[in-house]
Length: 404
Image (cartoon, rainbow, N blue to C red; front, side):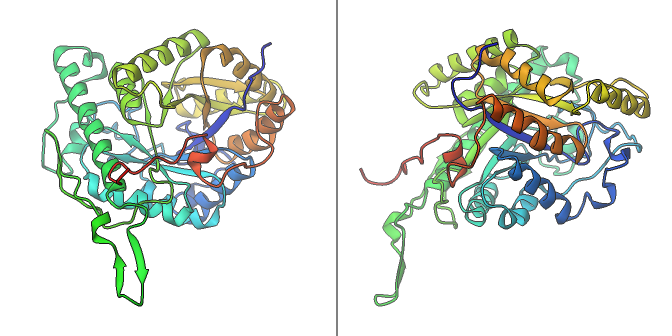
C-alpha cells in the first residue's frame, strides 16, 4: 500500500460520553463527571499525550439529537445524554492545563453576535498561548430560534433541504455564517500588533492610531469595531467548519482554514476535495492552504473482533443500529491505519476521529493508533510548533489594516 509522503494531521472530536448514544452506559464511562472541568481536562491531556494536532468540543443551542444538525426539534428521549457545557468556556478552563494541543470549541453563529465570539476566541488564544480556534456551526432548527425570539425558521425535514424552500434556507444560513466569519476576522485585525505601547514614562498604554474601525456592513450584520481585545497571539485563530454538501463546502472554501468532511470512501473524498478546491478558486483563495480532514466514528480495540462486538452490544442498548453522517469504523488500530492508506490518494490532509465511547476509544487512538502510525512514518514523534497554526503549517497572517 502507498504511504503518506507527509505526516497526517490528526484531530479528535469530543462530545459527552462519546459519539454512540449509549456510550454513557459503558462500565468505564463517567456520566456523573460530564459537567465538570476535570473530565474535560483529562480528555484533553490524553489527546495531548498522543501528540494530536487539536481537539474539537461539540456544542449546540439545544439538547442533543436528532442527529446531523437536522432542522427537526428535540426527540424527547430520556435514555441518552442530554445537556452540555458551553464549549468555549470549557476550552478556556482547560487551556492552562495543556501545553501543545490545539483547542477548537464549537460555536453556533446563527443566533449569536460576531463581536462577542471574536472577543471570546481571542481570549482563548491568549489563555492557551496561541492554540485557539473555533468551529463555526449554523442552526436551522425552529426550536433553537425560539430561544432567542428574534427570528423564525421553518420546520423543514432533512428530506426537503433540496426543495426551493430548503435551498433558500441553506443559502441564507451559510451566507450569514460567511459574513459572521468575515466580521470576526476583521475584529481580530482591528488592533495592530504594535498597538499596545505600555509606556509608563509618557503615560501612553496604547497607540490609538493602531486601532481601527472595521465598519463591516452586510445584509446580516453591522459591526463598527474596533474590538476591545488586542490582536490574538496567532493573529488569526483557526476557523473550522463541518461540511456535508455544496453550501457548507462553499463556506469552508471561502472563509475557513480547516474543513471537516464525511466521505465514506476515497472516491467520495476526492470528489469532495475537488469541489472545495473549485470553490476556493471562485473565492480567490486558490493560493491559500485550507486543510480538509475526513471525519470517522471509531470503535477501536487491539483484539480483532472486539470492537465490532462492542458496537453490537451498544446498539442493543440503543435498540437500533447506530448510524452517523460519517463513516463508522470498528476494528483494530492497525486496520484503521490501513484504511488511512486507502484514503491517501484522495488529497486529504488527515482525519478527525470521533471516539464512539469515552474514555476507551480515545485511549485506543492515543496508545494504539498513534504508535502504529509512527511505525509507518505517517505521524510525528513530538510537537514541532508552539501554536495551532504552526502545527498545521499555516503562516501567521499579516494584519489587513496595518500600513505596508
